[in-house]
Length: 311
Picture (cartoon, rainbow, N blue to C red):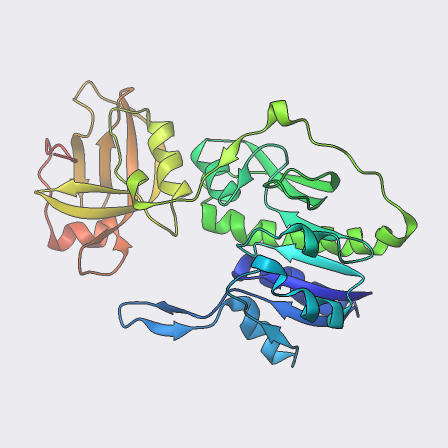
């Protein structure tokens, strides 16, 4: 099948590689423009562009699809189908209507739940037990098109958004492979029930601060849902500390929420949450320092028991 592929981050890499491995003809790859990254603001290509160039595929990085600016190019590429995976741009109707088999999207949730930009992270933040991937026809709405195939998976108790991201990327690659194999035969289109939809907004720094008055489960979900970005954090002596690898414990305490009840270089860092349950902090990262095990941090930075974090 002749395909135009549209994708940008590492989540989209596995699907592109699968389409290449399946022997499809990749007529062109559309991805976001290169962007400055890191402290030195070095112009860096998207992960999908890197893979496409490794396979000598034509790469296009338009700033916009407005005013039918890409219509002539897409007509020249003449795809049977356009496959879209985490591209990051809404496609206008002239793009959606161009291919014989339409535009097929791989989405990282069990639609109609978690439409939007960050479905994987929000499924962890919300404490969901199950999620999955969906292939769907694209329409002019935001993740509102008819569904084709779905595959679900359990979310591990301690699984981070980053770990789930990697698993769903592979599942999405499997699902788009199966979808394209069956597409010429005709597939059942399943309309979404919009009354059951939820929205997964883009993540930002406004949700990183831990509210210790919440339950241990909620704090645990926040820490793993924001790993690897933008990362949950608290404060100690007025300085920000990023938190990773929390674990629920069987311990409880009557101390105020946010109180450090144990900070032992051998045992680790233990903090009381709003429901009285105690959470173990596995790794931390202080400003200007690297991420490290909490036990290693405590060897050089004593935190007195009774300290209340977040103040």
